Image 1 (cartoon, rainbow, N blue to C red):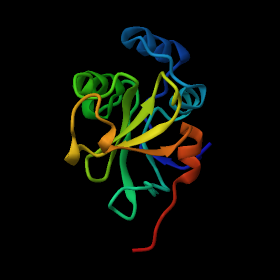
Image 2: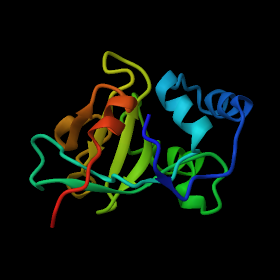
Image 3: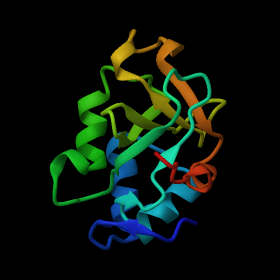
Amino acid sequence: MHEEIESPGPKIEIDDVVKLELEFNLNLPEDYKEFLLKFNGGLPWLDEYVVDGFYEEYCGIQVLYGIGREIQSSCLDYNIKAYRERINNDLIPIGCSGTNDAICLAIKGNSYGSVYFWDLVKECGKDCPDNLYVISDSFAGFLRKLTKFDD
């Protein structure tokens, strides 16, 4: 797991994760739960990633959400509520890109555990896949893909 996280959230326990899962009827992947328990969101030092098929060369991370973080817009529950009418029911937002697009996690369906980039500029409806791009087939895989590109 990625070990360099800036601004991690407050320490949480498994009960906090279970409470979130029950509140939103979620079944979070184990690698993502492990990240929440260890860091509770934050900003990975290696914060850039390639999104295949997306028009930008690479994307960055503004923040990965957590539970009970100091800034409300950096909290999972806040973002799940904010996007639930706009996002596919198989996905939850788990972070924000540097361009205010969403980083999403598949929480059910055939792509369970996969991480997506959701291009909000081209938002086309709740069940429209035209603005979703696969980043990785797992959260741990997503963390392994993070890098720093030379400007």
